[in-house]
Each structure stands twice: as structure tokens, then as C-alpha cells.
Image (tube, rainbow, N blue to C red; front, top):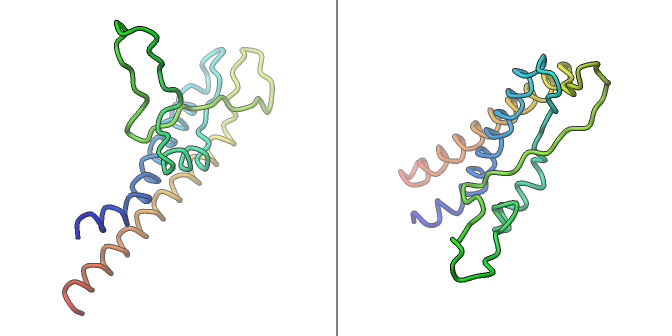
Length: 134
């Protein structure tokens, strides 16, 4: 029973983890809006989720060419490497953060995070009702 529940919620758990990671990246962009030469970053949510669900969790796997190398593994927590966002408006100090874009992306991501939580709560409530026979 636990395995079936884990399998049913794995997609949503992964999506929530990626949404939380994206929220952190967007918050860092907003916090560094006045930092010279700061380059805005973002996560491609769709491709990151596809990679994690396909079992490719890390951006790169390290190759061992000698038995004396320390084995390295990619990220196992479903995290994804942030990509740099293209510059929409040039600035004198080299900063590529556009506050309107960042605020909109932050609000959209927060809304989608909340929607995912609501969906998971409804799913768990439905399972609990089915188990209790209501």
C-alpha cells in the first residue's frame, strides 16, 4: 500500500521540489536587482521535470578514467541547474534582472506551487475517505 501511495505522489513531490527551487532562484534574482554584472537565472521547469521523471537527475555525470578517482554522482534530490535568462533591456552596470519579469515569474510560480499543494491535499483527502469507507 505504501509503495502505491509513494508512486502516486512521486510526480507531485518532484514538481513541488522543482517549484521550490525555482522560487529560490527567482528570489535571488530579485535580491540582486542592483548588483552590478549580476546575470538573471531561471529554471526550465518542463525540461527539469521531464529529466527527473525519466531518472536523469543530475546535469552531468562524472566519468572515472582511473580507479584512483573518487566516484562522483549527479544531484539525487531532483534539483536542476539554473540557466541564465536572456537580456531584455540593457543596463549600464551589466545587470540583466528585469524586475517586472522577475515579479511576474515569482507570482506565477507561487500560484502554481499553491495549486499543486491544493491538488495533493485533495488527493490525500480522497484516499483517506476511500480507506475509511465514506
